[in-house]
Length: 122
Image 1 (spheres, helix red, strand yellow):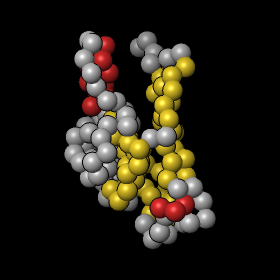
Image 2: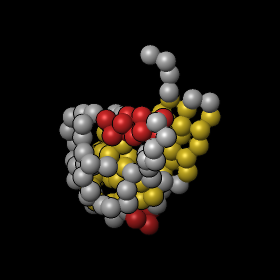
Image 3: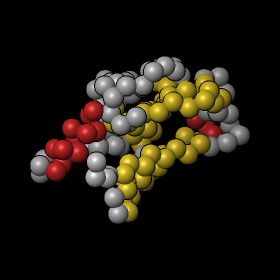
Image 4: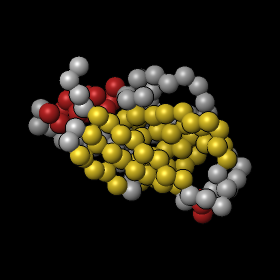
């Protein structure tokens, strides 16, 4: 779900202002209904800087990971939030989010997440 914050931020960039669109990935343990006005990653228990971002044509791709060394095998991942601040549990900085099926990460594997945003005529 692309958040209203991202849309407003992109509009600001198009007007020549500065805006940090996506810089961090938050991991949440709560599930629910996503809306374009969400402000937080519910049940947030970890936040990492994104690993890379790139643009090809009209598509922007963000990649972020959570390593196996961060996993404790006790908290289920249910919600992924893309934010523009490193401040954990902060409100109002969400840019996009999505639900995933309950995933219990262990020290046996890393996880990589991708967010692709395509700009098209509508």
